[in-house]
Length: 382
Ligand code: FAD
Ligand code: GLY
Image (cartoon, rainbow, N blue to C red):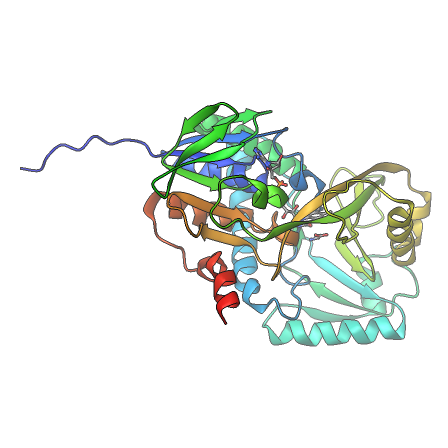
């Protein structure tokens, strides 16, 4: 006779209510886990709000980051389904746009660099095509008339990351995950080499598993045996207002020293600086000047557009620019989902699927196997 085993829901605590923590929380709750997410400020308001929302697996593929490409491509392929599921559940449109992305160049130097990137990215098997200046301007007529060449990447699109965060929040509520805002996790409850819960000041909240999804702050959660090597990488951004009925751009455009991201509502995002300034959150005159100058060189019509907003954010950067996904070294019951750096919006669907599966089954999805925290220990030993 088989003995009776009560079916108990695994209790999971998630630290951080950004797009990563919320996506994981949603997926876990859908599969029956009892999920509590602790966010010390407001959910979705840190890097997940600051981002441009580009789903740029192709044009952001850089030399040295080849091992990241399969993860990025897989997550990009999951975005349409992820967006559709979110929209159907919540009624919130998340602004997924699939017109594709252009990369443009004007001077001889810029064209040579573009050509070399194009050849590198084509060798990786990416679906990209080379455009003459005229062909680039046919797709985007308001580009600088001096535009001399371009790359078209049909699969690189964008999502409105702020709407996606708003939708995830509702999706979590609807599936039963509980979000606590204004609640800082001050430590981990560790007993006998295992994490048994999270510490909130003078309170302990028990959990079977704890997920650290605290973005650029992940290294700072006290109580970890081996804190992940994640640092803040500051980005300054701004947005302008276009006429949505007659926008200056419809594709995402990468130009030398900036990218331009047109939203459906007419917002034109211009990004971004990349700065090693810790958690400094100031906009600077130099940052704004650099963004506007680069945007104006690519798309002169920006000079007529009203300024809408300016902001900064902190990418959770890692030494090798890849995320850290898997069991935390040195402590049982602790999972890391952090270090998404420039690609956290792109990587949300695969992170959510793979980390929820790891938490519930203990199995590591092959897609995330190369991204465990142990790769840093291996690098030290070598
Ligand atoms: P966050 O959104 O930063 O969330 C972490 C949360 O943890 C925060 O809300 C914080 O308050 C909370 N927290 C921290 N410590 C604690 C604690 N002790 N207790 C409780 N809560 C805590 N990615 C793309 O894919 N495409 C892009 O186009 C893109 N553009 C970007 C542009 C800029 C300028 C920046 C800054 C980033 C961009 N990114 C982009 C990267 C992307 O924004 C990040 O990788 C992603 O948002 C990381 O999500 P997250 O949930 O890990 O972190
Ligand atoms: N992925 C764009 C950025 O991080 O600025």
